[in-house]
Image (cartoon, rainbow, N blue to C red; front, side, top):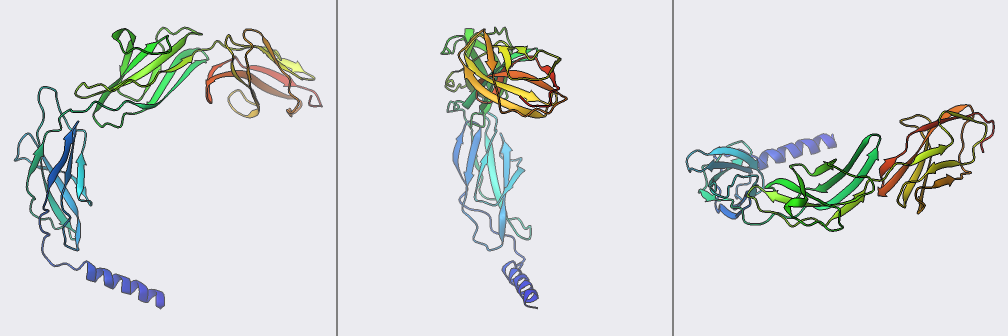
Length: 324
């Protein structure tokens, strides 16, 4: 009974607070343009004093002050209209009116009209958090670059610059492509064991360019070559894994699996400066089930956790009753 009384009391209070006075709300006042540049226009106005105000309808007309269309509804007393058109030869004029709406969906008359041109004024900010990963996997050789998009909402595309030097000059000779997305896969005339550096430039709809990103670099490594245990071998005992290392000092990972695509049994990470020579891995902490076939390969790494190159995959069948 107490719970029911609370519920009924709550409903009664809501009815009192939201009682319908039968009148539409008053039109918003104080509408103004507080910002207009680079394809965006900011509006603000004073909040209505009526207790039953639900929000505000935003109306817009382009290049004339007669044909307004509803473009959005907001509950706050400001609005940013984004992704607007502008052109370096002709700037679009945008006109705005707003109305207030109460909880009974009654709409006020229009506010005053304001207008602005979202002219292209500022260069876009440069992209951030550029990451790079060179890859030599299976038959694919490429370099993947991705970045956080520029925070500006009028970005048209990005320019990709590449160099074999540590720095990247922003000159036509180094421009290799343009993209509208925030990643790029470079597979254009790449050479193994050559260092490539990249910088990204953001271009807005009006043609203004950001500063280039700081260069990021990587190198496509050659593939490790597996030696022991040989492919399709049958072993009564195993105490080492051997392979020929790549041509640069790097990080490696030995992976043993119970299936070619999944089922990781063991991983071993290590770094060595040995190049183009046989590298032996002696391990004593692996448990392998007897009379099972396993798959093993070697990965190389130059950038964090993403592999650069990988060897072919070999299999061996472990027939011993004893592990190592």
